Length: 382
Image 1 (cartoon, rainbow, N blue to C red):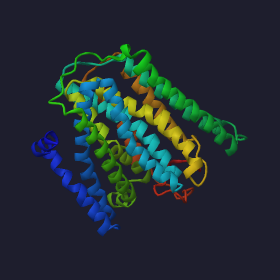
Image 2: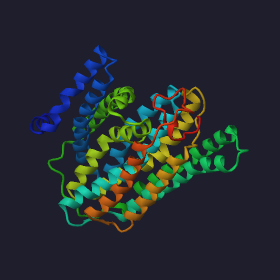
Image 3: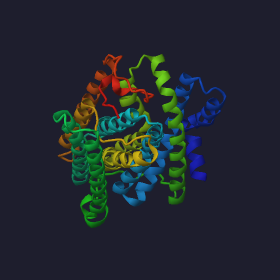
Image 4: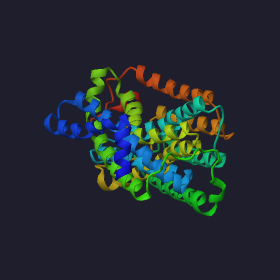
């Protein structure tokens, strides 16, 4: 444990780990102090994300950036999955769909764009594996089509009832999960030589032993999931205090905090000229949510949910996911990046964020089950 203690002792950011027990104590003593819990949860997630970043880089140094990016995306998405499962069990399907759509857009645009920007500010031009990026972008585009079809059919054909949408969602969920599994088989097994990386990465700074890195990954992921649950419980009330709309909270704030651990790893990798790791985390996380997490939640809704959940999203979310996917496909086509490419991608994300922040809430059609009612922006009833 000496490398871990040494890292905590010499990294002032990790001193914020003291807020983790403070958060749990405050949650037990003052469970109704939502604004305080919101602030403490954000302060607690930041150092946990830093630890997760360092542990992931240590694993990636020995397994390669492709596997490292996949591992970080998987562990990072565990936070979103825990949040979604909690909301799914409570029947808060609008929150589930908002967190899914928000995570896809945030990972595709904000995480990727900020990685390009931070890396480009330190390195004139960066290169990364174009084949891996194009594969992830293609999988993400496939998932977007799977999410688009139920919404498009329901809007175009009024005769398509809820029973049809539910059956279609089950079939599409199975297809998307199969596609995700075959994508992993293709990139990690049958054609892994095509995804070796651009070969311009700097070596990691004193990687931890594999056992310590994996143990840290597992422990920190559990803590991030627990802190994120407290965050979600308090964020709605804190949003009122800070003047944020429910749409902005569900689509932007929850997604940013839920993906903090992945973002720390992606940004750190970009600054060290390990853009393969950054792109793998950003696009891999988005495609994993769209191809695996969302379909699994649809299937699990028949087991733990009060009623079945479909893949039908509201039109605004589908449009944003489609634009995000097209943007990622466009900017990753060359395998080269500079800081201004990151600015362009971030501008698309900021357009979405500004729209949701300024969107006036409606007083009609609110879901009675949603703790964060994204029905304000036209979510269909679950």
